[in-house]
Amino acid sequence: QVHIVESGGGLVQPGGSLRLSCVASGSIFSFYDMAWYRQAPGKQRELVAVITTNKRTTYLDSVKGRFTISRDNAKNTVYLQMNSLKPEDTAVYYCNQRGSGPSPDYWGQGTQVTVSS
Image (cartoon, rainbow, N blue to C red; front, side, top):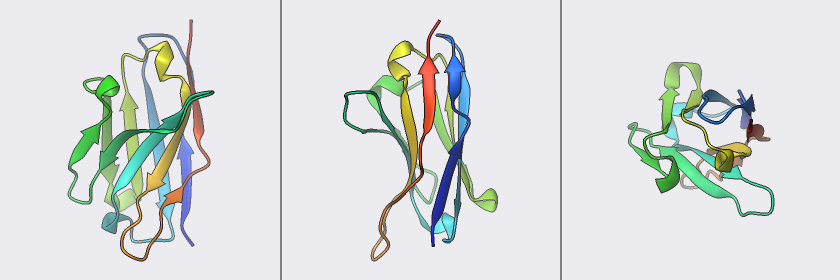
């Protein structure tokens, strides 16, 4: 059974940085694209960043140049480095192992990121 666990959220001032981590177990991690989503109060969940199995990355326009997604297959871990944080980045951030073929999507429980002075 696949298990996804995020960590690294917290309270940070505008302009600050955080690094989120996501550990996936129960699958062959390197076989799957991984993604970070976020959901702010009263808003729909949105895709923030994706990293493919061959480490190609894509980003939400509003985070380009500020956020970096990376993965360490040896540690079954995907990261989201977030710099120059803004209040509008406040949300619950979710890690997602993307479905492939017969394998469905798997989600973590989320980690809260709050950007406020």
